[in-house]
Length: 141
Image (cartoon, rainbow, N blue to C red; front, side, top):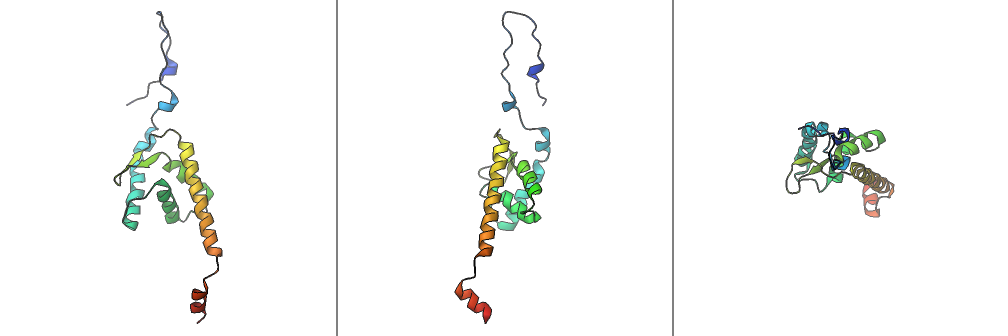
């Protein structure tokens, strides 16, 4: 299946100029993402094997994958993975991955990066909280 480049059309005469209905917004994602859908499906499968359930959403899958790679604090890898995952989606009632039809990929990637930022804050706060008195006494004994 090829793409039709309507911006290259030349008028051929007649009473009415041709209408240009297709825009970039309606263009399908590049072929690359269809070819690499198997890699995304592999992430979903590994998540299921580790947790015994499907991910609630893409953010959970994204954070889990960053943890698996040990890249939660690596900004470059987090941005790359967020960009890649923003092109995919989870089929609502199964473990199947699919190429997303949502056209605002940048907004989806920003949401994933925001989820990472919130998760990092939660982890920092959990690490800074002192141990409860019951566990501190047990550790001292």
